Length: 199
Image (tube, rainbow, N blue to C red; front, side):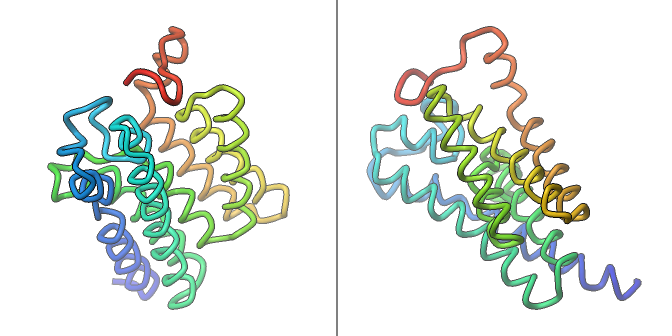
C-alpha cells in the first residue's frame, strides 16, 4: 500500500464510523418520539425529527449531526493534512447516509456535510450555512436549502482560488443530489412538503 493510501484509508474509515452514529434515532427515542423511521419520511435526520413535534430534539439532532462531520474533518486536517480531511469528510457523509447499524439506511447527509465543510474550510461551511438558511427560509423547503448549501460551499472554494477543495465539495454536493433524488422528483411535481407541514 502506498503511503498516501495508508493515510487516506484510515481517515475515511474513521470519518465513516463517526458519521454512522445515528443521533436522530437516539435523540428521538430519548425525547419520547419512538422510532423516528416510522414517521414522516422515515429519515433519521433533523427535518424528520422535527416532524415528530419535538423542536428541541430536532435542533439537537442538527447540532450533533453537524458536529460529527466537523470533528471528522477537523481531526484529520490536524492529523494528516487536507487530503486526509477531505477523505474523512466524505467518510462522515457516507457513514450518515449508509450506517451499518441501521442496515445501511440512514439520513441524507446535509447537516453532516455542513459540519464537514466547516471542519475542512470554515469559509465554505459558512457559505453552506448561509445558502441553506436563505433558500430554506425563502421557499420553506428544507431539501432545497440543503442542496443549495452544498453547491454554495463548492462555489465559495472556487471563487477563493481553491480548485481542489472546490472539486471535493462539488462531488459531495452531487452526492447530496443523489440522496435527494426523491425530493427532486417531488420538487418538480410541486408536491415537496414545506417545513412544518406534511411528511
